[in-house]
Amino acid sequence: MVDRRNKPMALATTPGLPPQPQVNFSHANSRVTAVLPTGESVVILLYGATVISWKNRFGMEKLWLSDAAKLDGSKAVRGGIPLVFPVFGTAPDHAPTSKLPQHGFARNSRWEFLGKSSSESAGPSDTSVKLDFGLSSNTLEDGVKSQWPYTFSIIYSVTLTPESLSTSIVITNDGAEPIDFQVLMHTYLRVNDISQIQVTGLEDSEYVDKVDAAKTKSQSGAVAITGETDRVYTPAKGPSNAVAVAEEGETIFTVVRDNLKDVVVWNPWTEKAAGMGDFEPKDGFKKMICIEAGSVNGWVSLDPGDAFEGAQTISD
Image 1 (tube, one colour):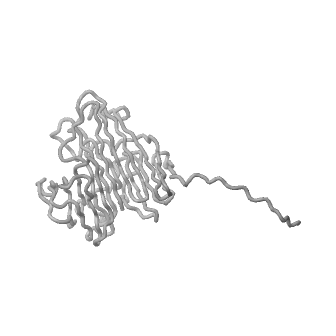
Image 2 (cartoon, one colour):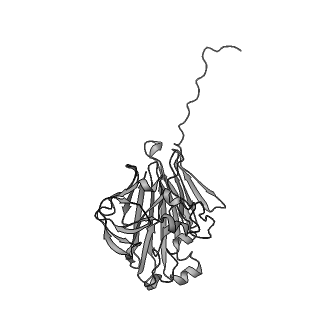
Image 3 (cartoon, one colour):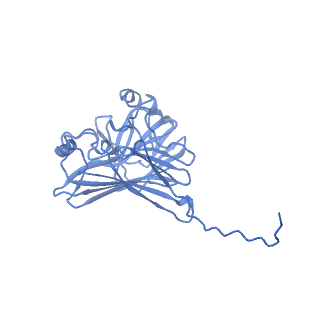
């Protein structure tokens, strides 16, 4: 081969777009998975718009999901982040919601995937993806409509960044009469050892102790879990003050709320876990703690045409 003294220069390549978040459907289009270029991921079931997985870039799961959780739409999911609306627990004395099942219908309804959006700044580490889901009175099953005959629409958004997971909700009253409701993001956080957990950010706050005849008490110091725990806190410092979960003295989660005034702290402990058919393994309570952002101490009243917005951001 003849050696050419003046070889042509290679053509300059046009820089491509930066890596984009990947969003895919699976399980007969019943699940949406988003993966960031940096490796973080989130999985949401269209049934209940329930977040069932949140992993960091190393593939470590941040949420607790029962081994016996039903993921086929046959019942509400045990674990992840089920969405409670329009009633927390049951409210037999509250006429508008008295006919509804425990925790309402949002977690038992099939939501519509409305689309995704992403943002990039200077580098791939700043990439995020936002997934939007919708539910309205028009798409509810007839049985649910008969139990709660109000006209509404909801947009629920799940935003994944390399550092955090955010869930936000916009509830609009599309009808001609006021709507009373409660809303809660029932987040199951994964921990290594519940006996080593302390929750801070709730100091000097009043709470309703549902394990002790719904007595109103005041929190002094950090919260430790030593038995069945079911408390509705109204944090004294307001939603923007972080509620932190520390394990062996190291902060592993922080939860910041926006317009969600209450925080439920829940762990079923031994007997309660044993009595729940979809809670597996039975000692799984040692590996989880629920820190649930919501407005559930009383009722939110929404006038016709008005909208309610609330959100939480969980950082690890």
